[in-house]
Length: 261
Figure (spheres, helix red, strand yellow):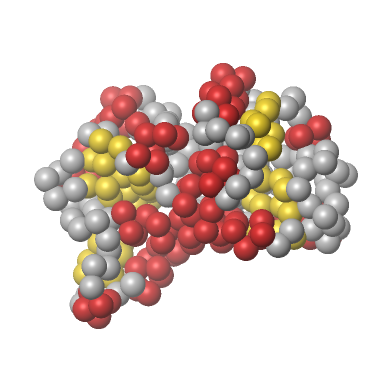
């Protein structure tokens, strides 16, 4: 498997078939198959994107799923909640970005059958957010650092995860990464707000933060893309805040995933 889905102009017109998918749970209502298969057509590929909804997998079960990617001829697979970190020790190697993050969202099956972990959430968010930021979960934090953000406030229900992320971001140099007890306190004086949790994803209709602190000078991004306009983004739009939907992040992450295959 080449390092890029398109290695020369002729690849754009030469059909190629790609079997890939998503390992996570719950994902039965995911729009990923439509988006990936459409993106494949745009790149001259026929893509079949298979949803593998596997709840409560332990390490052995997750390892079996990964090995099935090799046996069934997958080019690779995306991985998301709750397995992005659990998958790391089960892979043969990691890209530098995935190693730094300690999380993987794309597993590529190499020509020799090795399972290589990548994280395209960082590059995907950075690409999608660049215009938003210039005009007004872990991978997003690293993407913000790459965009030049130096004051990052983290709200995380798991104290150990919050500390690990704050330490990792601060280690990049010149970054003040602090842990906040609540979203409401974190957003005070902030330029932007990002929801990197599943809160607001169908069938959930909650918001990760009370809407009262939202204002027109804030930019608001949501990693959730189903629904496209989450309760958080609707509330932000109503007060005149700039917004970025999860679709923008998803499409840019898909593009980066294809380049990894």
